[in-house]
Image 1 (cartoon, rainbow, N blue to C red):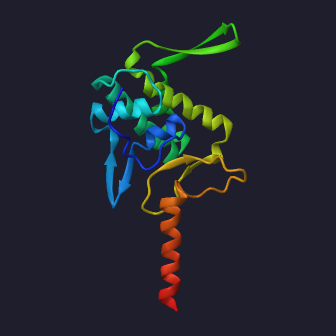
Image 2 (tube, rainbow, N blue to C red):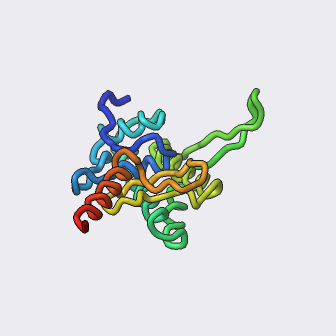
Image 3 (cartoon, one colour):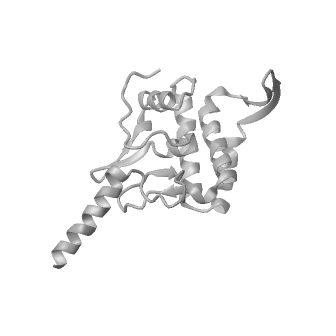
Length: 178
């Protein structure tokens, strides 16, 4: 478990989008949480994933992130094989528990666990509400979010940052014209 604070501007999204959001822009420079195993430990802890933060898990998490980025920012046709390649490293075992039916993830190689869970989560988002998977509307932002607003019109990763910057820019443009 990491004791380093999570530096990302947006956290708490579903695990697939949170993996995408391990890359973000700060003052025009792209930051990457997954440059080393310490950053991986931060991401694993933020998502409650009990896996070791080692080089193999880091490599697979980056591979899953790239596949998810191609799916979210591109087309499913172009990215399906990449997502499927990540999903090939695990499976769901259906179980019966004292609480009723359940599911348990199984991995041939546990180092694929976090990557597989993120890819599986993306499939669940697609099945639930694919139109609610969004890219922040701010031109300089590369973050993604799952729109849980009642009317489904959220545009910004954060109203406090990107939304406020966009409003300030529009206000500045109006006052310059006047």
